[in-house]
Length: 524
Image 1 (spheres, rainbow, N blue to C red):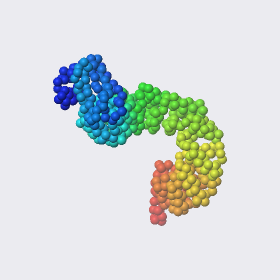
Image 2: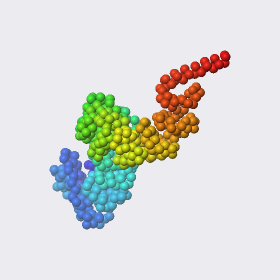
Image 3: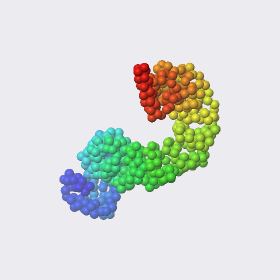
Image 4: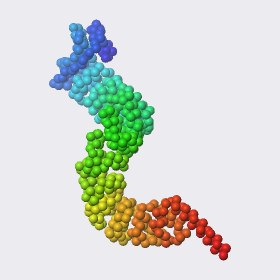
């Protein structure tokens, strides 16, 4: 700042005799350890007025005070006068008004900025233009630039910002979203931008793929996750998470970096470790499957555990198994979703063990919307399922794993082949999964059964599980292999349910027997 004032003095030859005053000012500024800036309100009676007077007292208190206006457009100066000295140093700030007007700020806004942030008056035009260019080079558009400067004018003067912008532009290829940059530049003190590059490099060294680093940075609160934390704190967080998924968790859910290690992450993970009875590997599986679970407070998660323990009657190991298959159970409201749905299962006659088995097989029952479940429930009732029965509960568990549209098409498909609603209910009771199979896949299998195998549709009533086997890998392959040996009248059940190993053994045995019979026939 002293250098700038000296350069300003050299631009005013009439003040060359005031070197002693400038020297006194320099001495007071340099020797002071406590320099305070304050700017009084600027008179708005005329758009062209003297802006301020910089006073330098022996106590090193620098104050800006409004002066009388002059009739010259953009010839505004900051007369700098050391106390007890008759001489003054005029600092020209007229260049700032057209500069800010180019950016999109009017005179009143510019005057307000200068009042809010006096160092702007002591910054060269070249420096200001260079800073604006740097901001634009990382993707800050005109609108965002105006907001940034108005909200935080130090973005144009703070030296620490240069290194940050260069790193974003050169090393991160200017791929940080403008909204992220705007947020961090307006919320983080420029001093906390120092070392940003080292913290990003640490994440790369810890295993974040380089192609994923921008994604991670764009999905965290940069101020909270990086700027306000030391390299040591970040390293400690990553080291702790390494026991449960580490970098994979961060890449999948970058917002985890926002959480405080001691106050949030450790207590929240401890709840799951305790529920798993100390099984850190199993806890890691839950976290990798649903890292968003770390966003819920200890109180919230423990509330869900207690609900399943008291209202459903489940043990901690059973509750943890539900967490393993459906960890997002913690995101479901206990009163609006969990309680009424568990109550429904109880009304259908399910006991605690039955409810546990149901939730393991059909955990989505706890997460789907009321509209989704209600639509499917109506369909089941219409085709003949009795309300509040175990069969109804079983069918509901199956249809939770398909869409409403697919369920409607499945039922329509069976009806189009001549099956009655009673037939559909009968088949689905034997093999509930037929209600969740893809309707296109079902149609292909039914067509193959009728056209290629020459079988009757009624066989599906006795063996609906036929529709659950893969057409090419199981049905076609086995049918073609057996057809040449025992003809087409084979049992669908025996054809498909026997294990692959046993089927292969039988297949080889039948071939040998067939070859022997052929040889005997030829010899006769």
